[in-house]
Image (cartoon, rainbow, N blue to C red):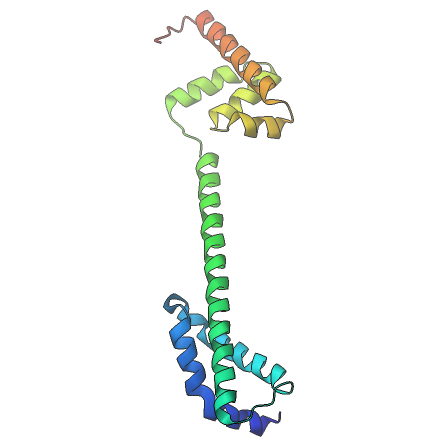
Length: 172
């Protein structure tokens, strides 16, 4: 198809293509309409050599069908990308909230005692204080979940002993 033939085709069919896109393409993605129209014509030109159209009406119907299908395909693709982006944003927010450490007096007080523990107990308790789950701690430290539980239990007992030595009174 020559450039002039394509220009003529476009002039004759642009209303048909835009009509199909207008009916079948999600309104929320209007910024993508040009791409859908362009892809419609690309698909038509690629397949036009293989098709024989007995009249203009059958050609126009074929072009309308391509525009409809391309609109539906693009809408679905954009919807999936939007969902993926929302999930990524949500994951980043969760990560950021975990990375933020509270800086109140009780937290700093507890951190001071945790720092006195042996490394294997300190690591587990520090991650727990940061809001990590047992499973996350297990994966991060490359130990079993049962080991995380027993170390956290033992670490809490050791903390309690350290605090008792400093005459800290517990309120259960």
